[in-house]
Length: 558
Image 1 (cartoon, rainbow, N blue to C red):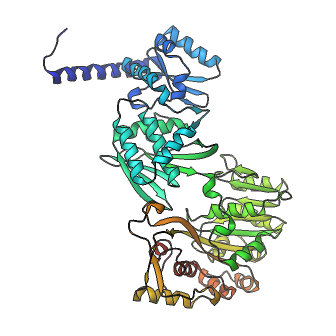
Image 2 (cartoon, one colour; image 1 turned 180 degrees about the horizontal axis):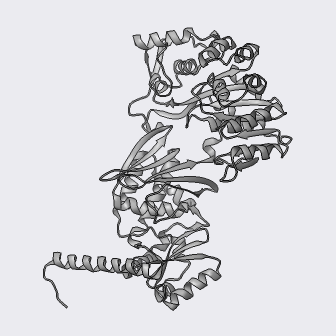
Image 3 (cartoon, rainbow, N blue to C red; image 1 turned 90 degrees about the vertical axis):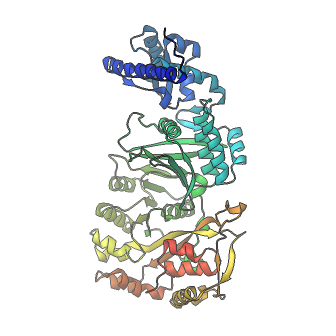
């Protein structure tokens, strides 16, 4: 054996040997007809590892590294090894479905080293990623701000000696999202690093950057948790997993997309507590709220909520459902997908189960109330309209910019304009604005431009009782916030709404296939403020700022 005196040459030789071994494993994988895996690039699932005692794994030269439900990923040195085959048979007898992956001796060594860290890993069961109460409580105690999350992740990422560091990084990221009430967690690969961002109150906020090596391990862990294929990197994939926190099961929806610098990931956090907003807490003005109460108490008709993605339509629909959910009422929903679970009959759109099919099936199940997640085409629209005409109360959503746009949109879908007046009782539109932190918001006088805009908007409000008496002050978010709002100046969100109710004037106008502007003019006497007017009223009451309102509603008055 030649011993190099030069340390750099020795390292170079070791590198070449390892690379040669990995290349050989790849070649042999084709020979045996199995996939190849490099365990240095894959997060090893602690539950999979627990299935085989370390002594048995070493003896058979195998490592169980991935598990989703009963599907098990098994790294093997040789697929023809009798002991490896016996291990596969043993796992099958236990009810698992093992898939063999060819690996190198170096990969096996990495897998065996992982046994030493099993006590640090978090156990998961049947596809559920479970954080122990002690662990989550410890993390939530530490995580009070974005800075805390960044520090904890960097600390774990730097600890390269511990194999469990990837699991801990994922735990910190998830616990941080829950602590700050984030709706989404974004991983965005760039040329030199990967940006981690949270969507807080509808706005993306930078947390920190990860190096690509750490991100690859985190990505593998999330793919395993979500039931995705590790070896597919050039196609979009969707999956899900759950985390249990203090007895509550919070579902995580995972979306992976290929990009220039690697796969980008978005985790949607479906926290049941986030959707459990009462109808009274949505932000509806008292008079509008009373009229909505009256409409949802009717035995039939259709109530539509409109707005772009992320405007709170689903939250509003679920608030309606909770309000009408009584022992004597049968409720059926058709959703895509079911985002939050309620104690009612909920069905989900699948490959061979569309909104139209689901709606027709639901009508045969004798419901009193039907919720259709979204009206996407003429077939669904027609079926929903007919349901509302035959003794059912129907809730649904539609993609339009405002309430007046609901009617031309349905007419474009092929619905007879004469039928709309009999079917639709309310068309609503909404947006979400961040609410100012009550502790640190700043009061000030309006400048000339703001005063002119507010004066012009308030002049159009039909119901003068809604106009605040003090119209000279506005409030701003404190630039650096305070501990109460995690230094963002805003805390929570509230809706700005507008609504159009069916009446004889609107019914007459609809016969001539009117434009949005004509519908808006015809329904002004109803006295319901527009979204712009409702937003400015909330600004004058100190609930939000003009800057925030202009982010979601056009403040330019025409």
